[in-house]
Every structure is written in C-alpha cells, then in structure tokens.
Length: 110
Length: 239
Image (cartoon, rainbow over all chains, first blue to last red; front, side, top):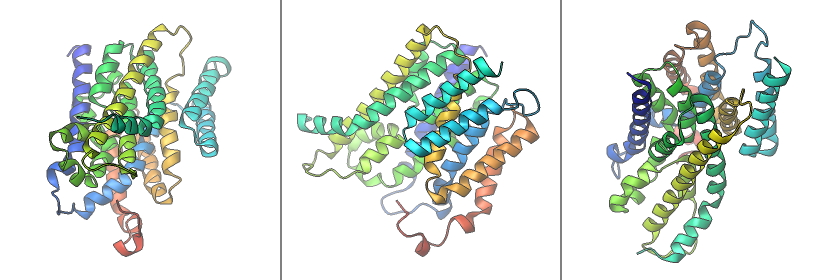
C-alpha cells in the first residue's frame, strides 16, 4: 500500500470509529433502557487510563540506559505538570513545556 | 429560520472554546507538518472528519508509524470511548432535534458537551435545536480553522523544530493533570500508566499498545470493587 493511500485510510478509520462511538448510545439505548453497569463503569474509568497510556506512549523512544537518559523529558514534564497545577492554563503549560524541551534537546543535551 | 438572538447567544457561549480550539488546533497543525510533512489539505480532512483533539494528536504518530489499520481502529476506540458516555445524557434532547441530530452527534466533543450541559436562562421555547446546532457548528469551524492555519504556519516556519513533538506529550500531561484533580480518576490513571510502562519494557516501543490496552482493561476490571462503590455511596457522581 502506498503511503498516501495508507494515510487516507487511517484517517477514515479514525473518523468512522469515532463517529460510531459517538453514535453508540443513541442507537443502542432507548428512552428508558439503562446501559449495563459494566459499560457505565468502563466509561467512568477508561479516560484517565487511556490518557496516562498516551503519555507513556509519547515517550516510548526514550532510552534510560544511554545519554541523555530521559532527563530532558523528565524536566519538561515536571515543568508542564507544576505549571498546570499552579496556573491551570492549558496553552501556557504546553507552550512552556515544549519550549523548555526544545531548548534542552537543541542546546543543552547535545 | 434562525433568529439573530439565538446565533448571538450561541456565539457568546462558544467564545472560550474559540480560544482553546484555535490555539490547540494550530499546535496540532504545526506538529503534523513538522513530523509528517503532510500538506494542509490533510489537516483540513482530519479536522473536518475526526474532530477529536486527543485522537488527532495521537494520529500524528500513528500515521507516521508502524501500526496497522486494525490497530488504529482499536486504539481509536480506546482513546475516544468516553464520547459514548456523553450521549447517554443527551438521548432525549437530541431525539427532538430530528435529522439534525446526526450532525450534533458527530460534533459532540468534550468542550461542546460541556457547553450543552450548561443552563440557558431566558431561552425561548423551540429554539433549543437551533442553539445546539449553531454552537456545535461554530466549535467545529474553530477547530478546522485552527488546524489548517497551524499546518500552513508549519510550512512557513523556518527554524529548528527538533523537540517540537513534545507538545503532544505536554497536551496529554495537561489533560492528565486536570483529570487527577478528581481523586476518583487517580487509580485508573495509575493503572493506565503502570500497565503501559510494563508493556513498553516487555514488548518494546513498536508492539506495546495492544497489550497495554488489554492489560488496562484487565486492571480496571480487577479494581472494580474498589473503584465502583455501590450506588448509595457514590452520591451525585452520576450523569
């Protein structure tokens, strides 16, 4: 499969699956029916678990046994979490963390 | 026929989302260009058809990477499962909206959902559908404009972008920090992080996601008794 076709199909898969997820309760549960407790439970807990998974996934290429040992990721992550706990401004936290990270990998840990 | 009053109300209501979507969309566009080199038309297609911030950020990696279409589908289900919970509280309201509900359902993002839950003091009878539709379409348009503008800017930017992909990590850390303000989210987050870390060590960076998702499901089901106390103890937590 060539790359353009793959990218197109990947986007379509994501779009269709996302729409089906959004559609699901409207198709399956009527006015009075209550969804199974199991589905409600998974719905409540899956979001933080999935986001934590994505955080780890984002740093999957880090090698802690070789220079720079994941130190730039650690520092920049601390900046994001501390700044966000303090100010609660998503854009500020993301910009500051990314700027710190870029500075570290371009100038300091080279 | 939509009244100016309803449009104005929806527009004012959408202003905070406008700021967020334009800037986060732009961040996505810049990242997409820097990491994949795809042109702004792809950004347009993604923002028009997917309309999901966290998935689109994750998609930057999925598109460039080694995943199969099936894995991308499973991952999408996992990342966006929460949307199916949003619909539960809107079934009745959307049913009254007639055929427009198919778009309202499509456009149900975290932010639009939050705005739809807010009370509308002084709302006239019968204009609820117009209000919801206008609000959803405005938010959708902010996201599209943000993503495409970011992609175009990404093409024009001429500086060393090494490290800019950390913006994706930062976005997820911000969402996670917000979620962990609520105590009930902390154990699920811990399960998600620990399971993924374990799978990274066991299976390596290219094959970690499917086992991680399986392990997370097993983990949250194993902790169900602790995380999901009986109805009476939960209080006002339910939507």
